[in-house]
Image (cartoon, rainbow, N blue to C red):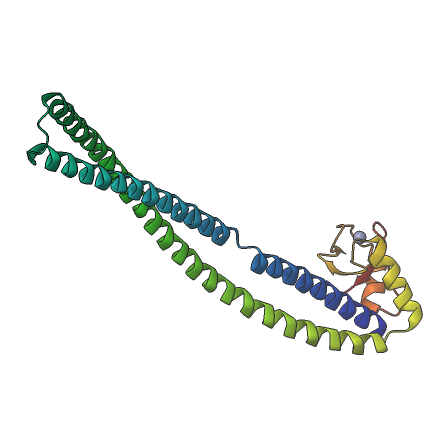
Length: 233
Ligand SMILES: [Zn+2]
């Protein structure tokens, strides 16, 4: 009885179409949301910002040092110009020059620390940039494989849908109604192949009479336990 054969083919196609659609959804999600890439990009942007801040701090200290050096030069020039005769004034100037010298030395220590911090931050930035590049490469490779699978699945879906349309044409409406009802209530599977003389889904053994009916397939035989239509396979 070709009705049963057609119903079984319809069941196979519906199952494969569902599987293809859910895999396509999975691929869509993977393509739209690559966590590794997002993570690597965020890390790089943070490192870049950190290095930028360190550079700014270093520049500020360098400017301060430079300003103090100019100040010291002026004080020294005044000190040795011979124009200042007043001993009190000379002594004040002397002390001011010494103070500037100490301040410069302190600033130079800070400058060195800032330089080290900046170089460290710059290295972290370079590493993060490298990691981002690698993540981009990996994502492109993965995505290429996913895109290939996606186009393959879409082609298969088209073919299966065409075949399903043809199969639907050859099934009487009464049988189709039964099939749809069973699919709704039996988690998508209305027709099941007999396996080892039992229902392929619930495992219920067939009686000798059922076995014969299924093989003869001149009427639809339902599994006595789950109610699905049995197919001899
Ligand atoms: Zn069953």
